[in-house]
Length: 205
Image (cartoon, rainbow, N blue to C red; front, top):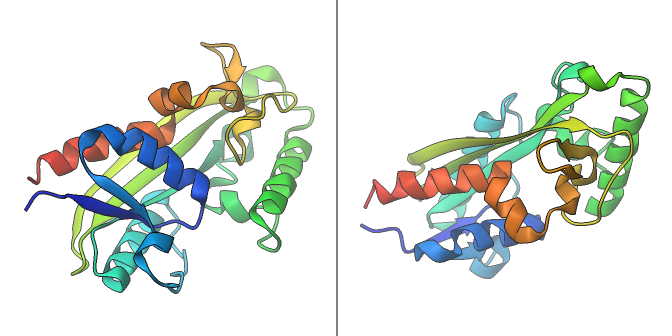
């Protein structure tokens, strides 16, 4: 059966809007968890890879909602920090407080940890892994996307969320937070993973 509708399994409204914008042209209706009832219990993200956590969330929410669910797990990998914050990106500096408060603490920690690291050792990337699961818990597809850059000396820009102001994109001479939404969706880790997911589910039709 063609996939007509998916639920995005995240409590982050920014992610829902990004995915909705990216997938809006493929003829699939994109819904948030709030739009399909609930509240739903959040599964514990105990995986140690982005792919593990994406699968865990997709399967749990697909079973809970009785719908086809798309889940992603994403974050920042910094080479000088041996891949940190990685899967702990959202709660790297603690899980308490609002999303904006956590973002502020995380960014402050990143600035502190990167102080004194020379330019040639500041390579980093955003990573996004996506998983699509049906209500039975069967995984239909998994994808991965990355956005390569370097950690800037100071935050730049006000678009986006999370670590966006810190990832500097050398080829366009701006940060991820200085890209307008259309540009960000065209090149972001989430955009790449989502477009690969479209190709994957078109093969399921």
